[in-house]
Image (cartoon, rainbow, N blue to C red; front, side):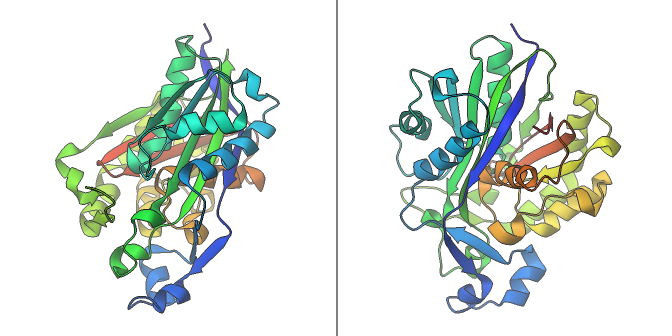
Amino acid sequence: MPNGSRILSLGHYQPARVLTNDELAEMVDTSDEWIRERVGIATRRIADTETVADMASAAAEKALAGSGLTAADIDLVVVATCSSVDRVPNVSTRVAARLGIQAPGTYDINTACSGFSYALATVDHAIRAGAARNAIVIGAEKLSDFTDWTDRATCILFGDGAGAAVVTAADTPEIGPVVWGSAPERGDAVRIEGWRPYIQQEGQAVFRWATTALAPIARQACERAGVALEEIAAFVAHQANARIIDGIAKRLGVPQALIARDIVESGNTSAASVPLALSKLVERREVPSGAPVLLFGFGGGLTYAGQVVRCP
């Protein structure tokens, strides 16, 4: 059995429709200045006809194309999402069918905004245990389906999209040990409850929790990987809110230049936000191949998960 795993390639997909702050200002009592100041978002992508499975498949196809592998090589597909409308079949099975992957293990995972880091960890564990050799890990969300476009506190935040990674077995581990957990006593702070509901959240409670409790946990991910924070080439946190990201980064001592800021153009895409931001950094060649990157997801549940990975 292999000693660990590594990311071979990444891919992402976003819908064509761009929703600007000025357009939102015509729908609710807000403004471009107000939104940028409080959450750091300028635009977000909105899916019109695309489903979660459509976006997940597109991101996965792009990642697979850059991996040097084919569909025949993949034996596990995992999708992190909290916004799929369909319960059965799961999104991962639909992705496998569309990519022509034969008889893989498939499952979806829902830990909301920390979902990609959770999914990446479970795939790493499966490969280490010998249950898989090559996998596709995807974060995909269509949060516009659950957004109340009359609520200015939440409608300014969310967007749609997907990010994916192809992961393979490696003798030298390039995906570090996961640090994960939850604060279940605060689970009501972010909610999508009932049948076809709207997203509801207690923004101030989430902000205080994220900016005060999470930096030490992110630091643990570096310690378990044996990587000093000073060695990190990029900090890719869940793109929840620019002020939250900056708050965590400041407590960690991460320089501004190393912080992923896909929040500006994509908004909060929950489980898609970490792979989406990482894929764009790699596509723009802003992180050297082999450099350590700290991934850290957090949000609904309230859950968190992070690990250090080597840039493909």
